Amino acid sequence: MEQIIRNRERGGSKLKFLLTILVVGVMVFAAIKIVPVYVTNYQFQDSMQTEARFALSGYPRKTEDDVREDLYKEALKQGIDIKKEDIKVTIQQSLVTISLDYTVPIDLKFYQWDKQFHVYADNHTI
Image (cartoon, rainbow, N blue to C red; front, side, top):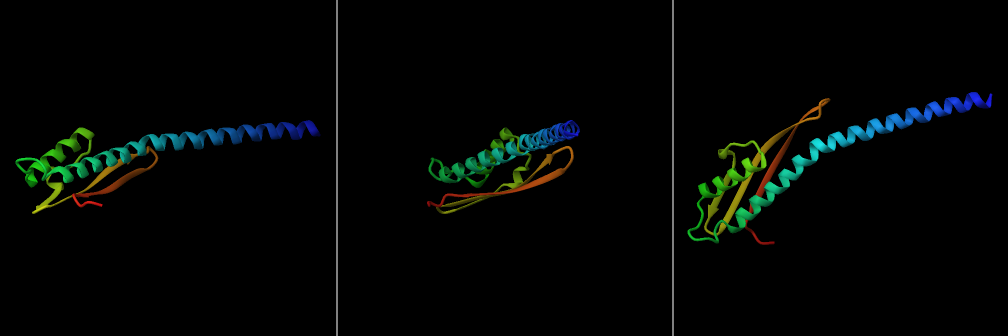
């Protein structure tokens, strides 16, 4: 009787192990698909903030179109699919504001997800 119970318990532990491996595998796969999107967004946000801070510090001062062009090139370099017109740049006296809304499709094979980002930067000091 004791032998029969032990055999069932061994099979149960194998099933739990396989389910754990499956869950961990799905989590790793999702992380591989999702984390790079957030890292790219963070890097682009940093580029926008840098551009906003230093847009007025050079000579000659950058125009709105210059800032937009620089950010568009950076977005293409980082693989962000946007149109140049999507980047909103405003320069008024000593204030620079930049905003961009974009969407990145994430294909998890079992779920299609469109992650929307709203990126904003200005040259205000903290």
